[in-house]
Length: 147
Image (cartoon, rainbow, N blue to C red; front, side, top):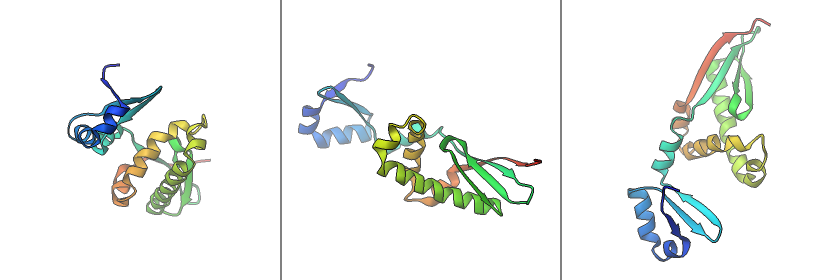
């Protein structure tokens, strides 16, 4: 491991200094018994997740409505307008991210949902400012369904 691993007892003894160092300087790894913990500031976490995109793939249905799918999270909705669709899926994202964290042990250990965790973390870090989440969500591939 390239990072120096800190002992949990030492971190606990110097907690304020440890937190200041993580926030102002760099992330840290802490070891307690056999467990290893990564500690990052929110700015560092934002940088880590910055390239993770939340994309809504949109199809215009024969009836003129729009179906949007967030493939990475297996969420879908259908609305009359693209704006309504985006708002519905943002609400669904917030609800799913909250549910995931409330049932973290179940979701994170489920093979088909473990990969959702980075998205859930990113969404949860933005839910106090829904406008930021609105800006983050990208609309992609508006195509007409010719089924």
